[in-house]
Amino acid sequence: MEFITVDISAESRNSGVMDAAAKYNIELISLSEFFLGSYQPSVIVVFNDWDPITRPVLVAAQSAGIKTIAIVEGIQDYYDCDVHWQRYAYKTASLILLPGEYDRKYFRATYPEIQVVGVPRIHELRVRSQRRWEFTNTPRVLINCNFSYGVLEEHRDRWLTDSVNAVLSAGMTPVISKHPGDKGKLFEELTSKESFYNLLENCDVSVQRFASGILEALARQVGVIYYNPHGEKVDKFQENPMGAYVVKKNTTELEKELLNWWRLHEMARDFGPRFLDHHSGKASQNSILDCARQLVENASNFKNKGNHSLFKKNIEILDLKSAAFFDQKPSGHLLFPNPKSAEIELNHMRDEFDNNKQGLLIRQATHPAATSSSIAHKSSPPSNSFAKANRLYRECHYAEALKIYQDLYQVNQLSIYRMNAKMAETKLKQITSLR
Image 1 (cartoon, rainbow, N blue to C red):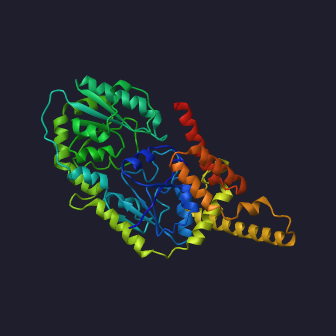
Image 2: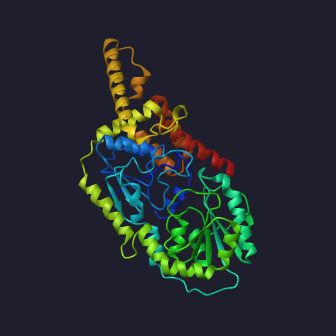
């Protein structure tokens, strides 16, 4: 199937998207290129559907009859048990692709269209040849520290200190893997810069909190201790470990289990496959192909059925009404905090837009000289100049691109021009500071 990949990291945060895309030779386009280009998507796919950018895009697409899909690519706190705000996770997209049969329970009463496809990266780890295990007197303990994005970060230092002290007290070697979004500063001398996957192959047991690292460790037969002294409420890893790992809540229990690390490895080896089958897709099925089939089938079923003119109009309304894709929280609030009201709110915006536009056209016909900036605001964008600026930006000619973006914004004050100008300006500053 033909696809494009839209990079929204520039609009939200730099999370290594560009570097990863370059490594795997994936061409990216910016959000503004997607909005102003001539693309006519049959389906729009996201990994999360509550982001301040992705939710408005999905709402705009669904209102225009374009299929939307969200892939749950690991684990999820669906009910926001430990998240500090109510996201309504996976309540916006029209089809949700779930990691395992276990996850169905969160959607029985609320979501009619779900499919279980597994987790492709877990499947890849499971089918990879297993290492040869040997008992050692000084095991390496992988401590997976992933307190990130404001979720329970206040417990990070105590959790990490407990974990390190327990490992040292047990006479073992602690190795810390830190999530890229984790801003903690403790034990930097013990924190590895290797990838989590490489560390898994060289450690004997792991200490985890609520993280997909539990699934990944089980996939590689590494023993798991889910250490939860701070009272995480999400039930996924607490409800029924199925004999694959243990759950502990204090340092005494943690140290005792570390000393039994070989038993934890045997639990992961013997009972881990059954747990993974239930939570991340059966090993006998190829999660990568199952996920791909769902994308292809849904894109084919909805091909050319969407009203792409209406989609473009919806995007323009959202941009003009709220600057949603530049200022993610206009007036300090999310544009669509609740997906249930999103369609209603968009309809109101569209009615207001049509009424205002009609009023402007009447005034313009009555007073031809009174052409206002708001009419210019709604005029068609000079796409050739914009495409040139985007090409210059991709080729790292940031100064030239910046000038074109600024000129475009002067003529047609869409926030996406201002946003791209800001991106180019940031790149120029980075280059200057490096020099």
